[in-house]
Image (tube, rainbow, N blue to C red; front, side, top):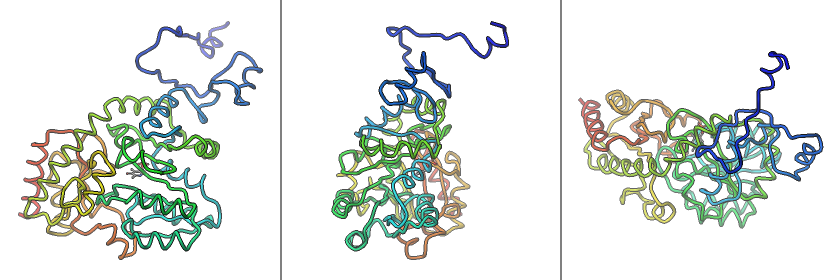
Length: 390
Ligand SMILES: *Cc1c(COP(=O)(O)O)cnc(C)c1O
């Protein structure tokens, strides 16, 4: 073998079956080969285990798929390159022309765009309600044949809690599938409900360090198997190196999440007692109108704390600018704390009535709480509130 042939056929290193690395390797390979055509055909017919092409499956992804499906309490998982890829590919896989989708004003902005604008272009109809409009939900599901109910809980940014048992019962009666974007609550929450499909942005609490993007689609075997070809052929594949980083992030998932939730509760209590704060949106506060529902549905209350300043857009921006430990940035769920004043928040696509339901006002500020020292965070919030009104 000449050297220029050798560099393209690097020597294979096989690890003995009884000699395992404690950390799963990054299988940074697009292709996997079997010994011969017969074995390859057997694999392609689904008659043997293995891997063939990384757009469809890869061992590094497989490890993460099994872990996330187990945490969420379902059979299987499809990994994609971002959270919106999980939403978009699920919607495209599950609906067809002429079908109707029920979605909510409080949901993630790009999800609203996908339901209203993108699916709308393909002849899929929708109704957008407030997640709190239980009578409206009943009316729509009883009156309009509906394929999908797509919802979130807690909602972003103001932590409304969906009544999941009510929603899933209504959907089931109407023959609609429920799709829950469970990013804010996490893999360890909501598994006990009769939800058909769970979506997660792995960019948030799963990776936890703000250095990688990913998305997951989790559900029962039959449904995932039915969606697999569509989702893999849409092609928003997660890269093996990204899967490795997310897998590493997952090792500290519970430690981070516990600390973030505990910090968030302290921040929420501090803000609720502050004279410049009109209202705090965090389901861990006993004053939250859905505190009891949240306590029943979740084991914790999340790490997003939003609040209304006793001021408007200008005070919100001054407050964000005055913070030293919170960066002004999109996204949430990382180890560092972040702030978003209303000036930078979306919701412009919503008509005034639904925008009010989404509860984004001029003085609304969203905080994503990290794992820093809680005392340092409170001190920073206090000085920034003082400077916002100086
Ligand atoms: C961030 C987010 C997404 C999108 O995730 P990306 O990884 O940024 O594409 C979807 N849903 C919710 C609830 C989110 O917070």
